Length: 186
Image (tube, rainbow, N blue to C red; front, side, top):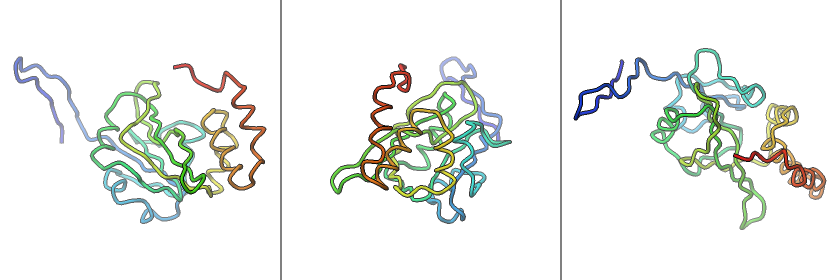
């Protein structure tokens, strides 16, 4: 059903939505029942065993937006209303705060792309969501991280390696710290 937003004082058309956006939820889980209900409510289609969007940054065919949910993730903050609002915000890729277990009292918090939208090629941070991530990634996720040259993926991969074997990622973390080109300036 189309929706039109009209300015009450001038009766000018401000925005028009000819149809609802088609939202895909991509996950490395084998069952859509393991995805939180709040995310399934917003999704028109759930694609299990699929994290390809991390490699190619392309929306699935027919989708206007896609949200990525990984095995072991737990929603710390966010709702179906905030996700719907995020889907209509401008930008093509939105980064979400992801907490990774570190010490009993301390999480490592990083930004990861989790929401892709059709539109302008501007990355943004989505403040309406926080996710508690897993320190045991699926083989699909590990493969995507290894193939990626993006700084967030290199950092996440190093942190996951450090959690498996303490001390193993120190050189990679040090290299990321020294590499000024890995940190975007905007």
